[in-house]
Image 1 (cartoon, rainbow, N blue to C red):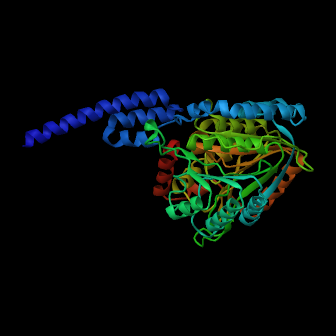
Image 2: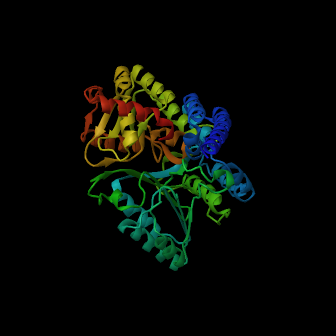
Length: 477
C-alpha cells in the first residue's frame, strides 16, 4: 500500500514537473518583461503544483480573442468610423498644426487630436454624479454606460432608477460592467434593469475556452455617452464610497471630465468595441461629428489595453514624461512604476522639470501601498517629489504637463494599468483647461505632506521586508 502511494506520488510529481517546464517555456516566450519571465520560469520549475494554477490565472500577458472579435466586427464598425473621419476632416475638426510630441500620442491612439471640443473638469463625486445624471436625463435616443465597479447601494440604485426611467421613455440604454470589479453586484439589480428595458451585460473577461482562467485582466474603463453628444470619463465608479458615504474610508477625492464635441465619438468607439466583445452586437449609434458650443479645445481620447499590439498605456506615460519641459504633476492612487517609467521620471527631474507625484496617505490596497515606499529613495535622489494626500482616500488619475497639456482618465501608474487593464484617458491640449487642472493640484498640495525616504528607513525590519516582497510582486498587482 505504501509502495502504491509512493508510486502515485512520484507519477503526479513527474507530470507536474513536465507541465511546469512546458508552462515555463510558454512564460519565457510570452512574458512582457524579463523580470516577469524569470520569476515565472523559476517558480514554475521549482514549485509546479503551486505555480502552474497561479500562472493560468495571473500569468497571461495578452488578452486573447479581443483582437479577433474587433476584426470580425470591422465590417460593421469600420464604415461608420470611416464616414465619421471623412466628415471630421471635411468640417475642419481635425487639428493639423501639431508638435512632434503630440504626433506620438496620435500614433498611440491611432486617432487624431480633434478640434472644437469643450471639456469641463468635474471635481469629486457630487459634481460628477450631478453632471452624469443630468446628461442621462437629457437623453433622447440612447445612453451608453460602462463602469468597472457598480454597487447595489444608494448611488447604484439612483443610477438604476434613472436608466429604467429613460428606457420607459423609449431611450435605448446599454450598460456594460466588469464582472470582476463588480463581483458583489446582485442578480436582483441586473434583473430589475433587464425588466426595465435596459440591456445590461458583463464584459466577460473569461469568455472563450482559452480565457477561462484569465482573471488577472480587468476592464477598468468608466464611460458614459449620451446621444453621441456628450461623454463622461474619469476615475469614479458607481458606488456610495465615491460620494464619501463610506465611514471607513471617509472623504473620497476623485476627478472626472465632461466632454462635448467630436471627441465624444472616440469615447463612444471604445465603448462600442467593448460592447462588441461582450455581445457580438453593433448597436446603431450617432456618428455625425459636430463642434461643441463654445468649443475651442483640442482633445485626443486614448483607449489602451492588453489587446493592443504595443504596450500603449506604458508608452503614453513614458512619452508624456519625456515631453515635459517645465512642469510634470501626476496624481495616482497606485504608484508601482516599471523601470522605464521610473527612469523617465528621474531624467525629467534631473533636466530641471518640476516633477511632483501625489499619492494617497491612506491605502485601499495594501500590496500596492507597500510597494510605493520602495521608490521613495530613488525618487528623492533625482529630485522627484512625492506627496501623500491626507484626508480620506485619493483615487483620481490626472497628469499635467507644462502649461498647456493635461490628461484625466482611468489609468494608474502601475503595472496593472500599463499591461493588464483596459483603460481610457482624455488628453486635452489647451492652456485654459491646463490652468484649471493646475489650480486643482495646487489645492490638493495644501492637503498633502511631502514624503521622505525616512518614511521607510525609520520603520521596523518587518515593514521593510513587507515592502520588498510587495515590490517583487509588482508584475501581478
